[in-house]
Image (cartoon, rainbow, N blue to C red; front, top):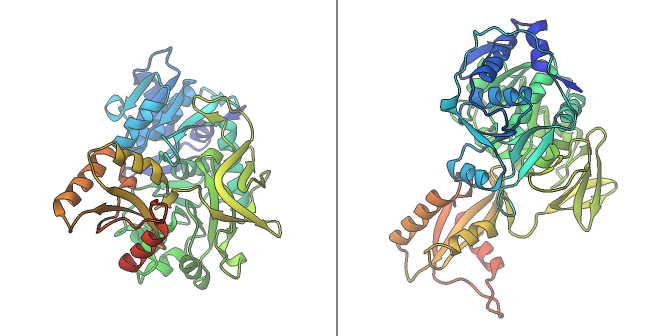
Amino acid sequence: MIPDFLEQYAFDQPNRRFVKINNEWVTYSEFNNAINYFINKVSISKDAKRVAILSENPAVTLISIIGCNRMSKIPIVMPSDNLLSKECLEVTDYDCVIKEKDCIIQYKQKSKYYAYKYNDEDVQCVLFTSGASSLPKGVELTFSNINYSCVNWSNVYDFKESDIYLNILPLHHISGLSIFFRSLYANCHLIVERYKKENILDLISSNNITCLSIVPKILYDLKDDDNAVSAIKNIRFLLVGGDSISESIFNFLHSNNINAYISYGLTETSSGISGYWINDVQNFKFGYIGTPHNQTKLSIINGRLNIHSKTVMKKYSGSNLNCENFLTTDFFVEKNFKFYFKGRRKKQIVSGGENINLDYIQYAVEQSDLMDVLVTSFDSDKWGDVIVALYVSKNINKDIEINIASFFKNNLPNFMQPKYIIHIDEFPKLSNQKINYKNIKYYLERNLL
């Protein structure tokens, strides 16, 4: 059985500051009281088992998740993007939906001690993949999965009660939600904020941040700022994950002696399962994912990375999978007992930390009224990959570009929007009349980089 850490802290250290959320510090007892108030006031049928949570308010999201746990219901955390959340609702099995208007947050209501405990193999939450290869998939993570992940991260970095962890990553992502559980497990302070390039360095400095998780794209936003190095060097644990880092990011971190940990992991593995400290590696090696975390074993099966760990999900929603192994879609090579990312499945990319399948976007385009539009991408140090929509026309046509932009905005999530819409006279073809993607890539790199 896994205890309810929040409730324990609420009665052992009631006045200790736990989380700064919506720009207000909340103690353990206040946050605990808000959850039990939620349990008493929210309208959820007694027979409902799976509860979809749809909110952009981080307090509502976190209170709803723990509240559902305490009511023995499974919280399904929906993306904040309206189009993606609609898609997720269509593919998941749920009994009811909680929205912001359904929740009244009351921190002053006092609670008694209920001694909540959870069965290890019960599902603690359901998060969604980004629809990298098809429709989004619901990833069912157990209390045991989350707990082992917290234990592993505590072995990577020795969290202190005095640590202040800044979370600027979305709570509907494993990267963001795992920070909440990690901070709770470690009994350190947590600040939840939306990421804004213009104030992130001030947030770090003014709040004396010691722990921060980011994706490589955020480092590109920050590294050329004159104040970046001085602010980031004070962070004792800078976790960089979500995509492979480039040589320029490696050099920035390494040359400035920044205490960064480069992580590899997935939603299906409850966050990172391997990694390395930047200053333990002398030279940049693309795709290196470091040392597996405690009780995690990696192997390669038919070129793909296989992960054996107690942090591996229970199953995808609607499937019968139930084991501690997960065979990724990522291709790897092993050299001298070290694992290196080699590439993704055809047409799968990562842009700004989001997994995306270009075939999925192309299919959506082909089902529309758009004519002669090709979705592709090119490599970018900042984004990882950049989505591009090419259209064929006799000349540059702004009306066509407006129609393409409007289609993407109305039919696909924000992270699947093309960064460029480009006119091309005709698609280059191979001798078999298939599209020559190599020539297209060369054309894009020559004209956009």
